[in-house]
Each structure stands twice: as structure tokens, then as C-alpha cells.
Image (cartoon, rainbow, N blue to C red; front, side, top):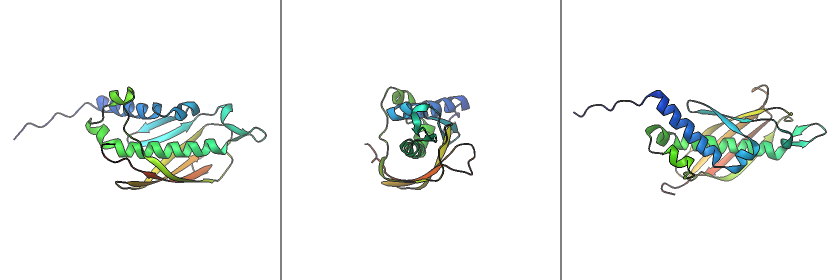
Length: 170
């Protein structure tokens, strides 16, 4: 019987997760432009859209632009799906976070369709979003996302997205 492999220290695993998430986020320029960040707790991601004047679409109200809200939900869905899809490779170390940071990112899922329901006015303050993968197969995935501001029980928008998954080796 071969000796059991010694488990990695928790700090090493956390650093690998954080580095992989950072590489995914910095690999999409529009995420940087909007200033979206992600708070990671285990395998759960919460997207944060910080308030800036540039995201206001109607200065009379003022209200967050509907396109920014939709982009925020789509980015949340895409990053959450990618995170779930890559989780096992990140955990076992087969996905090199350092290579990802140097720009060698895995292929990301591609949006097939995206539907947004605007529920309330996005006020001039920070917004938050989470996504849930409702179906994930080899070629197709379905994700629901929801954005809120001060109270998660009062979402400002929700979305349903369908993605084409990259083929292995793409």
C-alpha cells in the first residue's frame, strides 16, 4: 500500500482559489471598466458593483443604466458558471493560477441567450448579485442571477442565461 498523500495547507488552497478568481476577473476588460469585484466564500461568489457616476443612465431620477444592470447580471452568471465549471481543476491544482494570471485563461462559456427582468429602479449606491447554475451539461448550461442593493429580498433585477460550454481541450 502506498503512503497517503499529505493534504495541502488551507492557506495554499485559499491562495490558489483567490489567484484563479483574480485571473478570471482581470481577464475580462469590461469587468475592470465597471469596477466589479467578487467576494468569495468557499465556492460561493457574490459580485459587487460599486457606485460611480458613470453607471447612471438617468440623472433625473437618478437610476443605474439598464445596460449596466444587465451587464452586471450577465457577468455574475458567466463568472459563477466558470467558477463552478473550473472548481475541481482549481481544487486539485491541475489549473495553474500563475499561468492564468499571465493571460493563459481557459476558454470561457459563450452566451447563447440572456433575458433580464427589471424589477425596481437601481438607485445610486452599490449593487450586489449572485448566480445559481440550474443546469450544467457537457455542451449547455443554464444560470439564474439576481441583483439587489440594500435588501436581498427586494431585488432590482433578475436574469436567466443560457451558455454554450467549451469543449474539453478548447
